[in-house]
Length: 399
Image 1 (spheres, helix red, strand yellow):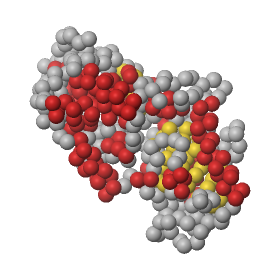
Image 2: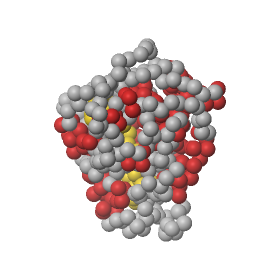
Image 3: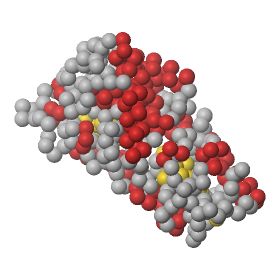
Image 4: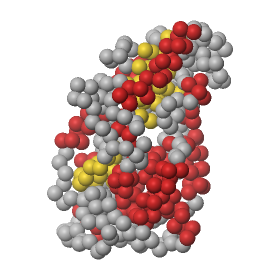
């Protein structure tokens, strides 16, 4: 029980418990129904940039300014991203990475690269290699850290935000299977050994297609791989010639970086649903397929989920208005399709995946299921945290 929670226990209604248990299984069933979980060489240089070109003062020229943030709803962001044409310059031809560190550097770089590939792109080969290519491009760009682990964890020690969201949103607590690690490490070794991923070329930025950061229309959109859109800076700062920093090893200890990132996140908790309007983590049909290493399968046109379809994990707090939480949950589920929003009051308890563990179900504070063809809205609150919710029903106690 939370220290701030009233001592009154919620009613132990066996019918409510049975209904809630059935709801808890629906995400797996319905997500499955709509799609399943289930050469290196010297490449030609970019065209020579104009002599007057250089780091443009109105664009992010340091990693502190490139953190992804958006105020648009997912559907609006997707529409706006789709309306932006790909730049004629294209992604460019990437150079092989020249590794020059020692054996310890190699192991650290490999594991940081593999972790970023899994956390940012799921299990698909092309998606992971695209993310790895961006990381290696950044290592060689003067605007970013000069090591692989330094790039991956860049900003995670600051409360103002990290470069790769998984290093500061709680995802570092996630565990991956041995098979997933082995596959990602093999790809990382391949990339460190000189393999390149041509589809993203010399891109140094990317974001998911359901967000639209402020810098998106100020960079050249050059590729789309899976759900991610890739960008280059304009002018010299985005050319291959700018990737001039020489890698010299000196990889920092990733375990220390992880500990620092977790401590920073604990001291600066993520904003709750009412503060940000966003989910800490979302699981959709396509993300579930990617995490399983499978290509997403298109849903039938009559039942294709909208941008809000899926299961969204959020943070809530005792001072939140229950009615306001429900309104925010409805906005997360805008677009149709099966959608649930589930909330916890402790960032450390936000799950990494479905199905929910017993511990996650016991610590659940808020559960919302959107109305769809399978039934009407279902709204539950933990009445130990929200002592008198003006909407919905008390969550049944989990034995």
